[in-house]
Amino acid sequence: MVAANSPGMTRVITPTPYSEADPNATSLGEMRLDKTTSSTLHSQLSDIMREKIYSRAWGAGKKIPSEHALMEMFGLSRGTVRHAIKSLVDEGLLVQSHGRGTFVAEGGISHPAGRGTISFAESLREQGKSFTTAVLDQVVLSAPADVAYELELEPGAPMLFLRRVRSVGGEPIMCIESWISMQRCPDIDRADFTVEDGNAAVERCSGKRVGHVKVRYTARAAGTEHAGYLHCDESAPLLVLEQTISFEDRTPFDWSLSWLTAGQAIVGEATQQRSVIS
Image (tube, rainbow, N blue to C red; front, side, top):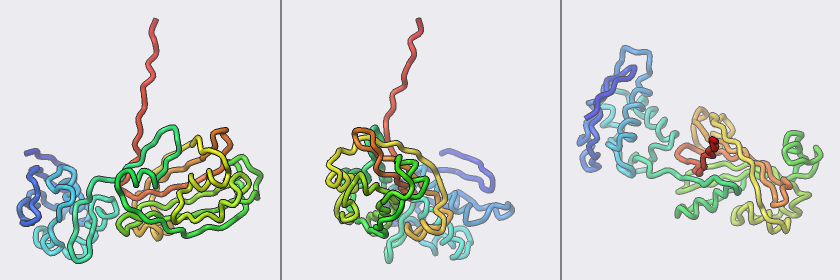
């Protein structure tokens, strides 16, 4: 047993496996709300449930206590309990199934990072994840100044703007927004991106191999627009990848932003270079 203190609550963590058959098998009463602090009740309840998940007292794939059970345990309104649960759903820690209840999310989705481009479709297939791709926008536009700069083109050069949303189990997990050079990838606008991977379409249209990528990672709130695409709260944290993709000859052809929901990770390896002391 491990005791821990943090603002607004006194916690005693007992890493006992949670039993789906008996929602009271792991008593949440060990973790109490403090109604005298400025911390909101729903955020305190989120902290308590998050601790149960991180300590593995609630195992992956297990059903958590019902809304009614949580209301009784903590003397809270249904709205407060639902707010706390929604926060953890937005973080990717819980998933809800209509008619069945709320469950601890299984292991998150990871995507490999290395010297090559990050192929989300390929990484999902390798992990055995069945997914669908919805194309929201596929239109030829003139290159804005910032896109032209990134791709070493003249402003106004013809570009394919492509916005796709990928979903797993019917839930959207990423929104990919790409600007692809029509000069360097002729007829790319005719590709069917619901079934063809982006890199495969580029290599087919250009006759060249995709070879290099420059990646920048940032954390951002979803905002109104992307919250709509990804069915999350406007304040939900998203991992955003900015990629400038080039052919093997280092000619850039694609600048993109990929918005990833919580529960995903970019995984890579690095080797520490050690200096030789003489």
